[in-house]
Image (cartoon, rainbow, N blue to C red; front, top):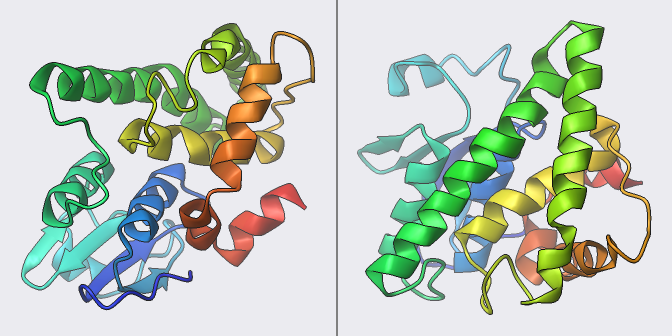
Length: 210
């Protein structure tokens, strides 16, 4: 990952297959934070991770004596520690709305992505793929209103959405071009061409859209 600014020294245990890991890497890139990136397989995590994280899970962020192992906590910590550029709104009501959007993304989309990636049942995968496609297409028109998700500025909400949209082809979710999906396609182009997003991609993730 091409994050090379001299502002901090952190270790990030990351899994390229995980959209939760990817969202944190986008924040790191957006903030220009130096990070020692350790790519790992969630099924076979590094031995040292068990001493750091009681759940031995990925992603895990280590900043000196601080160890974080929940992606939303990592993102907000990074946003507070490195306040520029801000990735959450300043005002409490807008911040609460952003947090609620992230909660809904996790309930409505992340759960389906997890089911597609980690469930062995073909019926569950097929059902989850259909639900994810329909859910994404149903909100496509809202992207015509603002350049980012319900916002004029790039936020943590976009950091959560971008890794899911990037993975759609590898998940078997096809979003066909149409009048309804055009705003979504434009939003995806904006996200994927953003410098921080390009910097956040691992080689394995780049291959998801070759």
